[in-house]
Amino acid sequence: MQKKAGNADNFEIELDAQLCFAIYGAAHAFTRTYKPLLEPLGLTYPQYLVMIALWEEDDQPVKAIGDRLGLDSGTLSPLLKRLEQSGLVARKRDRDDERQVRILLTKKGTELKTQAAGVAGAIGKAVGCSFEEAVALRDELIALKQRLTKTGSERDPLPSV
Amino acid sequence: MQKKAGNADNFEIELDAQLCFAIYGAAHAFTRTYKPLLEPLGLTYPQYLVMIALWEEDDQPVKAIGDRLGLDSGTLSPLLKRLEQSGLVARKRDRDDERQVRILLTKKGTELKTQAAGVAGAIGKAVGCSFEEAVALRDELIALKQRLTKTGSERDPLPSV
DNA sequence: CGTAATTAGATTGTGCGCAATTGAATTGCG
DNA sequence: CGCAATTCAATTGCGCACAATCTAATTACG
Image (cartoon, rainbow over all chains, first blue to last red; front, side, top):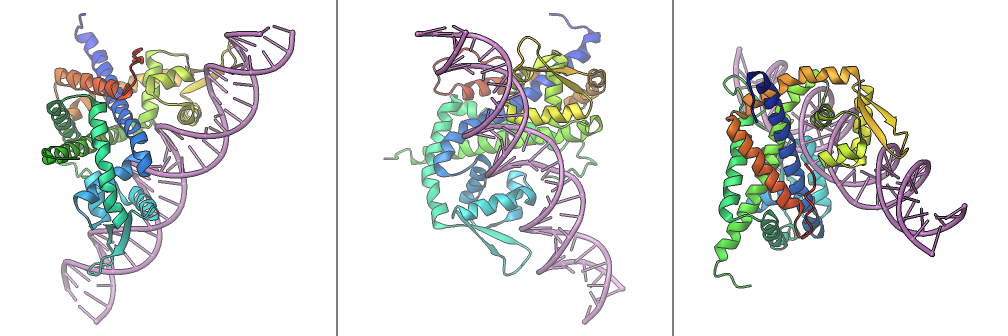
């Protein structure tokens, strides 16, 4: 297959399109794979990510969770409200800075971590690649994200989200 | 469960979590990168994917688009309605099978492809990797998706794409 | 032929994701 | 101290995703 300069543009467009579809498809495939695994836990995928963040470090303000996940309050506020209603987290105003709402794990929320441990194993099988491959993929995705989020970072304030 | 490899379990969980965050973050970074580029075209990212599918092949039934993108009618119906309102596509019932609604590009929709050509270039720069690297990443994502989508299913009729 | 099963698409309801706005609390600065 | 600017969270509005349900058209089968 030959591609001359004239076709290079088209080729780039093709590749761009394919990358679009690929990342889009892979991300959705990921959430679809998680869905049935998380259902017994009563969690959605984004809620699961929030719980992971809290299992890693309890008692965080909303903003910290938002930074970790790249989400803003518009997404997190209702999500956290649902987690609260599920009895997994509690919200309490920070005494020192009343603007902040700190999110804490309840007993139930803490205990859920044990159940969630099985999820990771199931995913590991679903991904079906070796530890090393998974590490490599993770690193590539992280690198991709970083390249994307700091495009033209020299001057672009880019919500650093 | 005994865990002589007690740390290995934790390690797996960590890796699972990191892969979660990575794919989630990369996908969102992608859509965020596209957003400002697509805004002048009046398209959202999913709408852009639908347009790409139509630029590749015009006059497709909703189902075919859904298969290509992995979306169902619940998502596509309103999305296509918006594209129709934007004057980019038209819908017409298939004469031979009145259940099907075929989506056609309007003149405006076809012409938009020219403008969209610039988007791919901009993304290419944003991704900031070589053609070969982009190809490799694309292939890995496709492979990841395929592993995920056929989890547990021995049947493997190669789901399109 | 006629009824059952299947298929295509639309609709409804829930939950993100994000921009924009609001409101309250805190900080900065004269 | 007092007032403006900033920060944090919540809210609103729009657009996906996806399950579940519905309607209409087509196909299968007795």
